[in-house]
Length: 189
Image 1 (cartoon, rainbow, N blue to C red):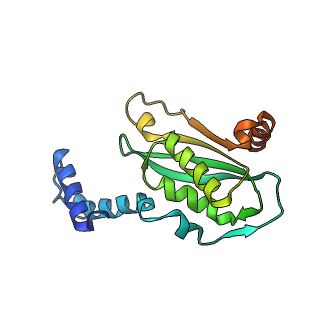
Image 2: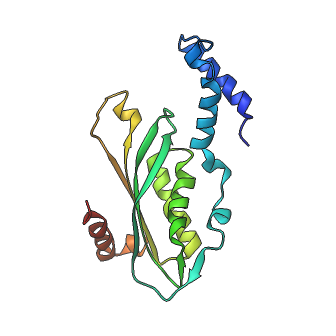
Image 3: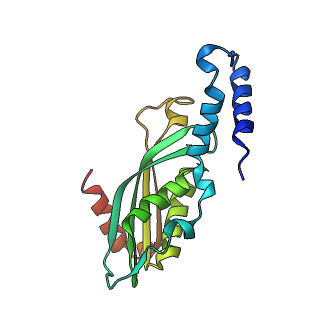
């Protein structure tokens, strides 16, 4: 369970003081509480679980061809610097008797993204969650994101993007299936 909001706000107040600022000046008086509320929102994925999120939105279907959901926006926080990374997620799966309600893909992405995270693990978590919920023959996930920890500090490379992929089942075993997915998500970019 997360610390109470007031406790979290007191830590933000200490950070502001540690930066050499006066947390009592007019513009910063309410900042510790606002920052605490913002951080709670940005990490609310810790308080969600897959079963409750999916809520039985898995339906029987004879569909066995590739299903692709692309350009799902994602916002996460780098666990190394606690700075945002922002991007999009593309998901494909090969149903095997069950399909997942469309909105659940975005909800699964959000649940894992709204935690302190690295993109590599986020990609794997999303793929494994979809595989476990649907029992699909294969799942593919590609995430492309821009990382503020690389753009705003350190090497300060403004146009850099990171791409990660996770291929499970048929997407891992079959080059043709993998290529079909990658071509489908490339066609609109």
